[in-house]
Amino acid sequence: MNGPYMTVAWLTWRQLFARRRAWLAAATVVLPFILTFFYRLATEDREGDRLIFMLGMNREIVIGVLLPLTAVIFGTTAFGGEVDDGTMIYLLVRPLPRWGVALTKYLVAVLVTAAIITAAIMLAWLALRNDELPGAVPRSFITASVVGSLVYCALFSYVGLVTRKGLVLGLLYIIFFENILARGVPGVKWLSVREFGVSVAQWAGGGVVKFTDASVPMTTVWVAGSIILVGALAMTIRTMMRYELVERL
Image 1 (cartoon, rainbow, N blue to C red):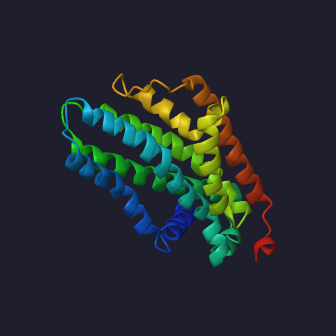
Image 2 (cartoon, one colour):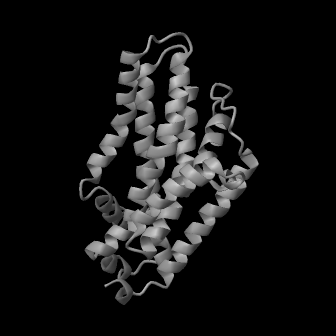
Image 3 (cartoon, rainbow, N blue to C red):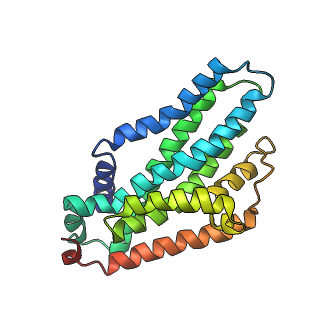
């Protein structure tokens, strides 16, 4: 990445961690560790219990809640924050291709989201690690979080670019689509990024991570996930190419 794009990446990084978002990132990392602490206090820790707890926590809390929340916060801010504080003007008047600016900001949001969730997974695993919890457990969920970060941030970056209500719309999507429709309406889970993550975790788990209800085939994950990812990025780039400064001033 050359100098001008490093400047774009730095501005995006600074924007992502402004306004106390660094504290939100820290809380996200620490929360699974705190849950493991209470688990050890409240249970007898029988054989097999740690694996069951870790699989359930990573599926329902980390992949189901923390990943989309982190992605919506940092994904929408990658563009929305720049518009609100006026630095988007600085970026767009520089002699850089707008598609390059869009992809750089998207990649920074992905890296930040994936890094935060990876740290959360690893910290919790280290707190409970024993012979029941091989390295395949965190590795499988880290793989799932990377896939989820790529797709979620593509969606939320686009939303953050086209509206000032990106965070609100993203939260509504997480609540109603990912956690209500995808769980309760047959067929909808085949378009759910959360369910993609569950299937990827099982696929990457090497037989250690197993879910009886992971019903989205990996072929669907790769095909549907790629379509959503490429489609969202294409719309983001198209919007950036047509972006007029006066529209958001």
